[in-house]
Length: 81
Length: 243
Image (cartoon, rainbow over all chains, first blue to last red; front, side, top):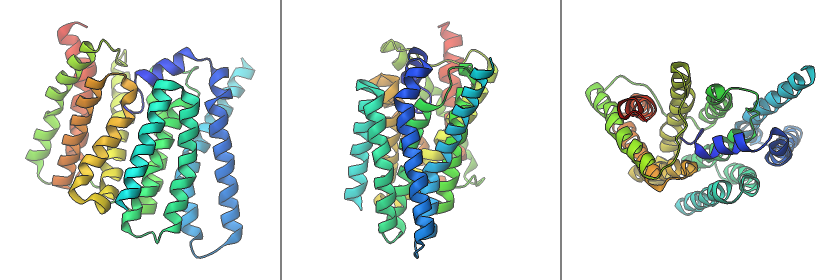
């Protein structure tokens, strides 16, 4: 009900992939870039809370990376068709 | 800490309302801004138990971002819950690694868990009528495979998130009131059903599941309830009423 509901189905079906990828897609990619950069800075800076920082950032980074991977696969499939 | 938790509840309510009722882009921007705020506040805190709620709340913006950015258009709708559910499950498992909630599938208080699970059927009848009353379409999988996928990747992942992780970490802040906090969060994330009556019934099912989880320290009853609820709403009642 929270993952797939009327709103998500209607939005994904009514908006084209091009529209979605240039609006919400851009935000998620920018967010991913920001979080990855942040993780690298934390890694380099060190500090006693480094591990906590990294684990906290991973909560957001890993799902977004999986989406990013799917977007790349999707694009490649589109190109090969 | 309660003040902070209240603030994030309001922020999530605003972001979800903007996403659903105004436009997806500004809502997703709000969600995206919330993630660094939550992580900064968690890391600046002493990581004591009340602050375990903050990284767990990151999962809600992630849920909505995933459901709107996953490239699902080329894939049949039946498989969408897999595509969205797997990355969310990864996030949930990483949260459990960080904050270590004491969720489990203990086989105790089995009669209570079965009764609570069975309560999903009458609740689904209420939800079915609520959806028909508000004349809103519910996403209905067109095959048994679709139903099983929805049950596993949507229903059970939701239970793990709301009754497994969020309920447990909210208990550090609210005590027994965590049931209400996790239920409100769940109801907010269901605003996309576009039906107030349906949101109320879904929230009620979340409340019953949360009460069962708190009472038995096991997710089993809540997961059974969700399975019965979704099966009733999607398969049983439409088959009986013919719609």
